[in-house]
Image 1 (cartoon, rainbow, N blue to C red):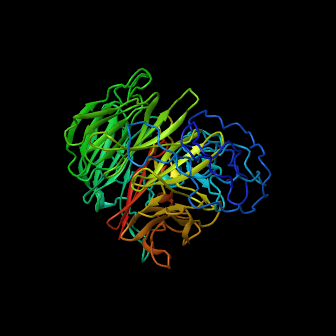
Image 2 (cartoon, rainbow, N blue to C red; image 1 turned 90 degrees about the horizontal axis):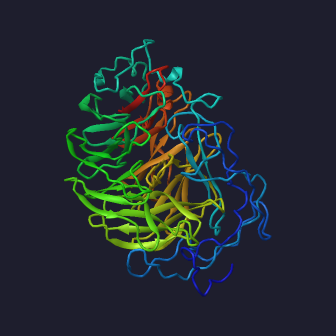
Image 3 (tube, rainbow, N blue to C red; image 1 turned 180 degrees about the vertical axis):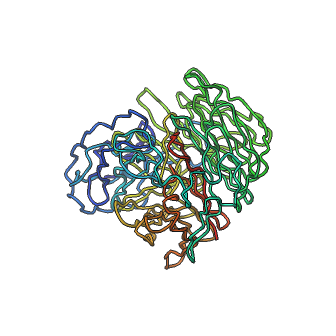
Length: 603
């Protein structure tokens, strides 16, 4: 381990990995993905160049443990200033040393760039269903003391071997009686609890009920987005193509008439406000020059349409062709590619703009929480000082609370949590990744140091960084919960300390299917276990404290609807008030069968 340099580096934040080759294969390195194409990758996206990593300095061979370095080796960060300074001002470097040297590539190291969320992946093959039908983020941490290793993103196909768009299969049409009539159509006209398809017929003792099921509206042949799923104490609300639907949580009866927009929905706030409000964005036309710039506020319980607004362009290369929305307290932040505009959630009045600052820093992404608003900026693009910066903003005013620079070459891709702030980053050149935690003042706190392959599920961010686009991961005040990746059999959930980045405990799936974190509530981790061919999915709880971390079954979904449950295309899940909700986030546009939209289970 080398000693800290006497002066901070001149490019980006201090303390990031030096110019070294990517770490080697060893245990936990991701394997080369299958050769099939899949849903989630842009059509025609070529795989990354197959360039094997170059050998570095002589190091122990395959699987040999590294010498542990001092505690809190820094991630790709500079240390934040002791007190907030002017926006964009460089922070003072901290006394961290350089990271340990990585080993040489070992046996089985994949020849292709592992990539990361938002980076074009090698094509992959796979199946369908929640945490299955959309690209997964596969990450593999190094042995204790090693800073970063390669991760990969798999695109999972739901179509045939020819790589064409997915088509609905026989099992996608939930018919228990052999009829062709879709159950509870998703256009708001469904009869809720009447269950015309008898989805509860044949339910075994101990199995949950299918509370209700909704088919999706028709979508164009090119497909359509079905973003967002918001659950309140009264309603379950879902967006799909040009409409927003609302159902009573217990019966599935329409809660209010569907809201129909003149053009397709192009963005939504992933979370609702404390008083049950969301904002939906839709296109202003259908031409190639159409923009995602029309906003509509909606009350989830009543369906009341509140204020509307039109998002202005930010500049020549900063248009509203693609935007992201996030809610923080009473503020709605609209992120463009190089700026952001904040609106008051109650009135729709513009609050402030976040634009270029310093010499060449442009805000490129935002993530919101109850009382926190996080901004990621790209700085020095095209120059010799290219790097990202992370800032926390005062939601109501946009004032900067702190700014933390990121080392050159590292890109902030996702926030696994906003409070506490846990970020996932990639380094394309080094073919490496890093998961780090920042404290309330923006100072580097810890990084993941677990020798494992992890598989949270993250969608694609093609034109914008979708910082809050991951599920299958949960965080509480001091622990990060990540699912491991496995090619066969049940996986594990690993609890990782946010204090030192080390594993606290791990729990294996109760079945031979994968298990994924959903949320933490009441001192317990709630997780979803995927269905199998002979059993429905499960919702389980795991104590987060103490020495026993075994699963307790909260809900056992019916076996005879397992194929329906498993067939939800690109599924999203939620658990609220003892009910389990499952919905599609993408419609294929296939005419072969009525597509699924949403399903609810409960006792």
